[in-house]
Amino acid sequence: PARAGPDVAAALSEVCEIEVTTIEANWDDCWGDNVIGDGTLQGWYHGCQTYTQVRGVRNRYLDFSAPILQNNKRAGFLTRLQDGSPEVSPESDLSDVTVVDIVGWAPTPDVISTLKNRCTNEFFDVDVNPGGNLVTTDDEVGCLEKYPEFCSNANDVALYMLLEGQADVVYIYADQAKFYFDACAVDPIQAENCELWRQFGETFGYIHMGMDEFAIAGTTLSISKKGSGLPAILDPCIEKLLETETYATLCDKWGLTEDCFPNDFTNQTGTTPVYNVPTNE
Image 1 (tube, rainbow, N blue to C red):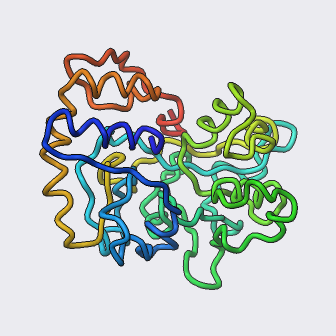
Image 2 (image 1 turned 90 degrees about the horizontal axis):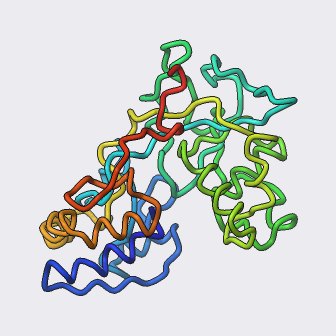
């Protein structure tokens, strides 16, 4: 979804008298470790693109624009595999293992308590307080020494920590591993660490997918500082764009057709991706 953001933003000029300029910025300058980033707070830019509106702490700091994708993001938990079997049982409440959170990315740790283990029908029990069994990607040891080209990507860092035994479980989007795996299969030269992500299904895999309790809305076009007024400018334009052929074309271009809002020009199959299906189904 992040890669589609600039195209969607540029397309707003087709339906409104507006011009959106997209620049590259660090994720942490937009949103950090459960706190607003300096760039968003201090107005270095009007907003940051393609964040999911989740429940919890983000809403204390941020205004979200209307979503550009359906509420399609699901939470998941990754663990190591040993001879094809998970090292952490799917029936675990995760209270006795080390869970790593990916700093700056949703799903955020403050909403883990809303997630229910579909195998036991009980809530997960991860202690997110200091000294608890949740660590973050900021706690990694040795990543830059082993993979100097990749450890600026927090998802890469989390997977490194898992495979190095610095964590037992990664708290991550349910589609993230497949997204990176597929990209690496097409072209192994990626910004992400293909050496690690191509091990998906062999040395690591999901024990839970399809958990949607954490989200309020799907991927939005922008986040901005609370009270910025940016949604009032963007939302009417987003609403118009979602009805156009241009929107449908961009959805197809970025492989997001099933995740996009349907309109007269989209060609959706209605198939639910496996990563959005709850584990017990």
